[in-house]
Length: 216
Ligand code: ADP
Ligand code: ADP
Image (cartoon, rainbow, N blue to C red; front, side):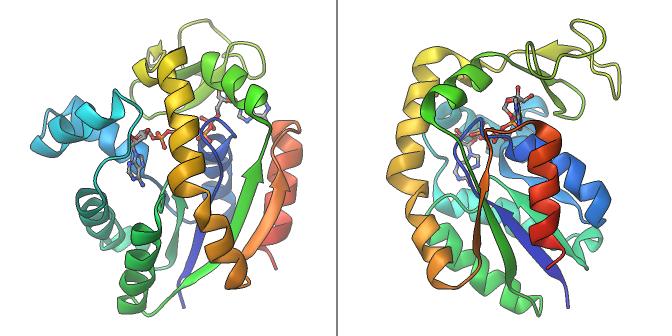
């Protein structure tokens, strides 16, 4: 049976950072809806053009578009044993669609670690985030600095600050999270899948807590 893990939590809490580490340990592909959208924007696809108009404002990309993109990605051969989902689902409609989709693949969501941190922590993390152009690896200017300023430790590509990490958009994204994504906490709690993880700890400690959940 495939294993599907959904990382839930507000923007900036560390989902991408942890997903990149866990993907290797758990041998599951890391599927980030945000990274998929940014790849489409870089390749100037129609999907990318549409997504960008929403992302720039800190709003969610419409459900049908997002679900279609995730369906295509989860159908790839590297997902036969499951996947580590980061940033999807973000609405109840997406969560219902995911349930149906995974049933088609003979699986279901197995674990939902819900990573938490207070809002000022999120704002500070997003404000200091530097992302790599080639593969979306993330660093923080204070908490997780690259060895060489401006270059990714893992692939040497240029680091940039995302447009949507600017302060007004950050506040809108956090509002959108509380309005549209936070209801998924109850959705997965009711299904007995949710485990709360304190995201306001050092990166290694959060990883250790997540591994304890996934190994269960
Ligand atoms: P998300 O994917 O949830 O939006 P990221 O993984 O991109 O979050 O992390 C946001 C920022 O916070 C990045 O700059 C990252 O380096 C930093 N970060 C992630 N986890 C921690 C942590 N446990 N402590 C301090 N900084 C962190
Ligand atoms: P973060 O983890 O820092 O919130 P992401 O990279 O996950 O950022 O998402 C960036 C933007 O991409 C979101 O603000 C939203 O516009 C869009 N996006 C990502 N995932 C989804 C999703 N599941 N549904 C709708 N929009 C999404």
